[in-house]
Each structure stands twice: as C-alpha cells, then as structure tokens.
Image 1 (cartoon, rainbow, N blue to C red):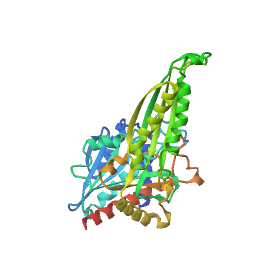
Image 2 (tube, rainbow, N blue to C red):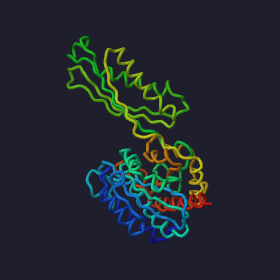
Image 3 (cartoon, rainbow, N blue to C red):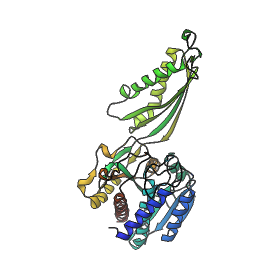
Image 4 (cartoon, rainbow, N blue to C red):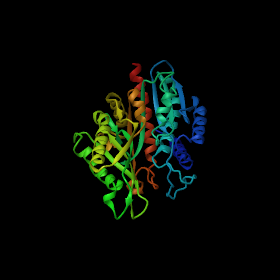
Length: 391
C-alpha cells in the first residue's frame, strides 16, 4: 500500500505533467523532467530513444529476466476547458487521454521498485514512449533497440479508462484494442455546369455512392462474429453551388481485431470503390496506410495481470467482458507483437464527482484515486512476473 505521502506525491506528479503537455515527438521538457527523476531514483537512464523517449534501467540483486514497463507521454492538440488549478498552461494542447497519469504511475512504480532492488531477480526497463497519439513512438523506440541490450522478456502497461468506474480493472486475454488503418480515396469525375449534369461525371455523387457502398464491407463481407469498423471521417469536394465537382476526396479509418479481416479488408474496400467508380464513369486513386496492428495480450501474461489486479481491487472488480475491449487503437501493440505481455485498463470514472467525460474530450479528467490503484497493480505484476520467471 502507498503511504499518504506517496499518494500525495503521485497526485502532484500527475498534475505537474498535466499543466505542461507537449505533442508527439515534441515532448522535450517532459522527457527532461522524467529523466531527472529517474536519475534521482538511481536508475541508469537513456534519453532520445525513438526521438524523445526515455528509458530507465534497474538491475536487480541477481541475474534474471527483463521486464519492460511502458508509459506514454504525449498530449493532444485540444484546448482544455476544465476549470481546475492544474489546467494546461499551453494553449491548444491538453492531456486529454490520461497520459499524465500514466507517467506519474510509472515514475512512482520505478521509485518503489528501486527500494525493492534487493528482492528483484532480474531487470526492469521503465519506458516512457513518445507519440502514442500519432501511433509512431513505439515503432521508433523499437528501431532504436529498446527491446534489446538486454533483451526484454515481457512487457506490461496500463491505461486509465473513463469507460470503467474507479476501483474496476479490465483485463482480457487475446485482442483488447483494435488495429488502426487510415485510407484516402480521390475520385476523379468530369466537372461542369450545375444545370447541365448530363455533360459531367459528378464526383460528389460518386463519393456519396462510395460512402453508402462501403457500409457493406462490414455488414455483408466480413464474418458477423469478427468485429470491424469502416468509418468515413471527411469528404471534400466542390467549389460553388452551381458547379458540378470534378474531384472529391474521402478519408477514413478501419478498425478490427481479427487477423484474417485485418489482412483482407483493404482489398474489400478497393473492390467496392473500383466497382462504384466504374459503374458511374469515374476514376479513382486510393492510398491505404497501416498505422498499427491489434493490441493482443498473451493469455499467460493476462492471467498474471488479472491475479495482481485481484490482489489490489478484489476479484469481483475485475472486468473481462466487452467493457475491457475497445475499437480504439494503441501502439503498445508494437511491443506486444514482439514479446509476450499484457495491457490493461484501470477504471478512472467517477460520475458522482462529474469525472466521466470521454477520452479526447476538452473536459476530460479522471478520479485521481485510480493512480494509486495503477501503481499497486503494476508493482505487484512486475514482482510476481520476475519471481515466477526466476523460480
């Protein structure tokens, strides 16, 4: 259990970071503050990993496996509307997803593990990752060798989660967050006078048909038991009310858990787009970008996380149903593709206090009681994993 002094310092750390948000790959002051604290705790520290990432390494009392603990550090381009003493000092930038809490939790765990060094049979890498919101930071850190020297044997992380009440913890084996793909479709028609449509190929009409037809990719082309989402986020086209557009551009995203759907859905989308455009006399180009794969928990590691969480909040407060999964994406997936591990949700919602706004909202905030819960679970999970692996 955390002492009252530790709890207050944990909250102070969270509010320090909340007031000083920085966007992805711009987290220089954040990284400096993290590195300074890790050095103060006695960690071996590397900075500039994957751009602006920080890694603190702790060697235990004897040789053993290496466990990676990951926290994301970037903020979002959102103007904060909360009227709180720790409101963001940077206009148009806000910690609206809980990363400020993740940093505070990871630093507190790091400090407590240093005190337990004589009981650690192995090593701990505490990784502070940039640019999660850009889905780029984890890949950059892996390219910079964060999983090697020494080789990482397991990876754990958590996300404060306003879709669960404080005191609840969501842990699932297998896929728990979806893949994230982004696509852009440019439709080329033939423009002309709004009163003479027969002389044209209306790119906006074609785009409208494409949007409608793309809904069948999920409803009629994927297995109903394999969750998937195809969303069109923007449509741009046209210049004036009486001009038929020659070009329109659509952008969207695809989310899925299923590996087969992940592989086949780009072709499904292009087949639909090609068919609609051909039938209406238009041409198209399509760009499809893979941002990250599904975040998939190793079953054995998920069970370890469930046991650690049960010791902290009680087994009756562990959620393993759909509330512990989301079609949102996370580049924690990059680590979990390479080493076994578990990513889990720590409930942070408190409706009675009005702390129930969704993530990425300009009024997002969470119950800070969730911070100590996150610390205790992550510390127990680390100690339990190392003890089991060394035995």
